[in-house]
Image (cartoon, rainbow, N blue to C red):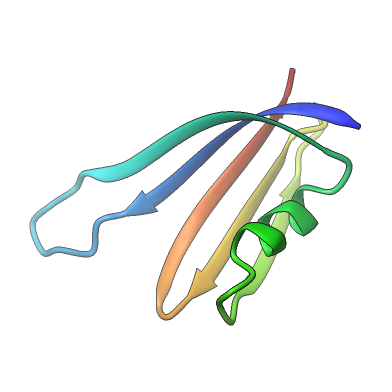
Length: 75
């Protein structure tokens, strides 16, 4: 399994508030998209992913009109 630093960003949808919730974690997974699906398993989610040249993956998950960004960076 590959080891990643995971940064999860959740934007604040309140008007005039540019802050966002940001969470950091270290995870082991062979498939970052499957990891996000299992993390959000209770919700109907639309997922897109961008694979970077350095082996990192950015996953966008849209659920109930809220987009969460998961950035996986290889360690």
